[in-house]
Image 1 (cartoon, rainbow, N blue to C red):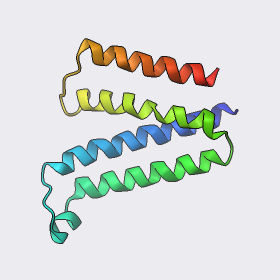
Image 2 (tube, rainbow, N blue to C red):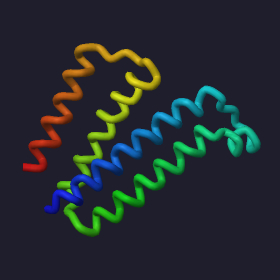
Image 3 (cartoon, rainbow, N blue to C red):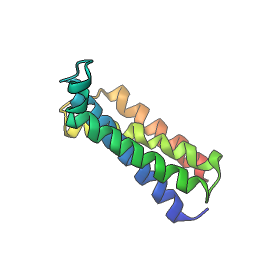
Image 4 (cartoon, rainbow, N blue to C red):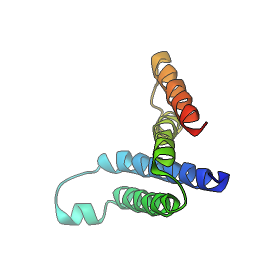
Length: 112
């Protein structure tokens, strides 16, 4: 499988993680009425990024195998954790970091 396709899926995973970050920021001002939802720019940006991520991923699927590409999407958990720590100031324990290492190990084994 092409390295370009793998990078494309990694990028899609990163965009999806950015979408999650904006979902979190948008959830601070969330109320369930139409005007509030339509003016919640964090939520709208999160949806757009998540949608773009999905489009990129579906495009990549036309060039690669699902069984190889889907595990790469698991890197979105890693991106999301890094972004949450860096941007939102969230804390991750040692056990959380060990979990991140296991995700990386698993993805690397699938790609071998």
